Image (tube, rainbow, N blue to C red):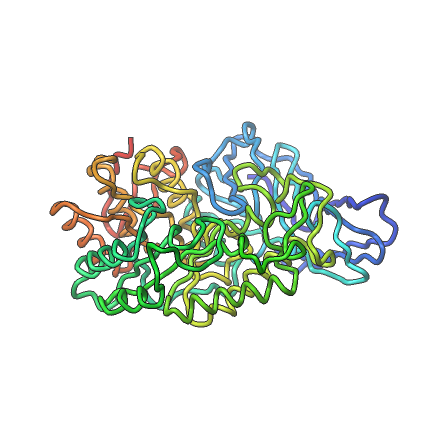
Length: 499
C-alpha cells in the first residue's frame, strides 16, 4: 500500500454567492486534522478537502452510511467504487488496512470519495439547503482521523471505531426482549401487548436481567403523525406500563417526535421546505418545549426506554438510501435558527431528547449514526427486517450486523433489528439462524412474536440465555460476501445458510 500523509492537502470553499470574509483553518495533531471555519456576512455551504496521491488500484474499500444502512454495504474494488462514503471508510489489501474518517459528533456532515488519484472529503456545513449564517462565529467542523493497521479489515474497523468516539453512552445490562411491530404492524392493543409481555416474561424466566417489551407504532391517536396520546385500543398508557412491569418485564415505547398533528402545533413550529410547512422545527423554542413535554409525559407513564424514529427524514426530507454525498436533496430552505449548521441542529435535538429522557434508555431509529454516537444507548444500524419476507431480513439485517458490528460498544449498542416471527411467513430454519447469530453478537436482541410454537419457544429462550453472555465474534467472509455466511464465534466457526 502506498504511503499517505494527512498533512498534504488542498481545499476549496463554496458559499451562497462569492466568498468575501470566510476563512478556513486547519490544526494538525499527529494523524488527526481538525477543520475550523469563520464567516461574518458570508454564508458558507461546503468545504472540500483533497489529498492527492497515487494509490494501489487493487485495494478494496468499504464506507459507512449516513444513518441506517439499506443492504448496500460491502467491500468494492477501488476502480469500481462509485459510492459516496459517509463518515469513514476502510481500504485494504487483506493484509493491512487503513481507515480514514472523522470523529463522532462533528458540527458538519462529512462524506468521502476515493479513487486512483486520492481522497476527497466533502464537508457539508449548510443550514437547511443553503448557507449557514455564522455571523462571526468560529465552528470546528470536524476532526479527520487516519490510522494504518497491519490487521485484516474487520479487526481494523473494530479498533478504528474506538478511536472515533470518546464517550459512548452504553447501557449497564444486555438489551433484549420483545417489540410488537413485525407481527402486529401497527394493529396492536393494550391486551395484545400484555399478552406479549407475559410471553417475554416466560421466555426470560430465571434471568436476573429482565427483558423489554417495546410498544411500537400503533398506540397513538394517529399512527405516525401524533398527537402522542393513546387511542381507544390502548387507553391508559400508564396502567399498561405498570402491568408490563408487574410481569417482570421492562416497558418501552415508540414515538415519531418531529411529526405531530396536535392543534397546539402552530405553523411557525414547522420547517418551511419545498414551499410547505412540514415536520417540526427543533430550533423553534415552542417546538423544543413541546418535545420536552411529550417525552416527560412518556417518562411519567413509567416507560424505561424511548425508541424515537424518523428524525433524519423529518429534519432533512429523505431517508439515507436516497442521499448521496450531502444530507439533504432540497435547496433554498432554512431552519428557523439560520445560525447553526445542520449537524449542530441534529446534535442539539439529540441532546434535548437525552436530557428530557433522564434515566430512560434511548433507542435511535433513523438517527444519524455519527451524530447520535454518545447520545443514544442503542442505535438501529439498518433498515427494517421483516416478519413476512426472509429476503428482506437477510438483505437488511445480516448486512448491517456484519458491516456495522465494529461500531458495537464503540459508538452505542448496535440494533440490527428484530427477529420477526409471524405465523409461517418465514421458514423457521432461516429465522432460527438469524436469531442465533444475533444472540451471540453482543448487540441488542429483540424478537417480534405474538405467539410461538413449542420449538420456537425453546429456541428463543435458548437465545435469550445466550444473549446474556459476552462472545468473541466476527464475520470471516466479510471481504467477499455482502451477507457473510462464515463466522468465528468464540473458539468455533459457524456457517449460516442465508440463501
